[in-house]
Image (tube, rainbow, N blue to C red; front, side):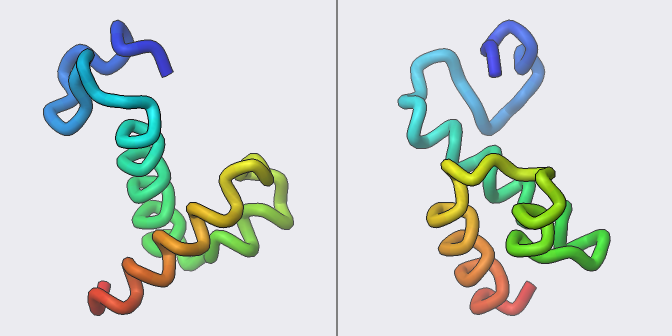
Length: 69
């Protein structure tokens, strides 16, 4: 997403690499999905999440749940 739309975002800066921004956004997605009782797998099946993010999103979901969240 364009940095101009994220002007007030404290985690994402103009100088961050794309991979860092993607990780932050996917982690937010994982937390949101958990808050509504959905998993990354369900989101993929429903077409809510692009398949190109599958591996990273599943890894982040595992880390999120291992952290006790």
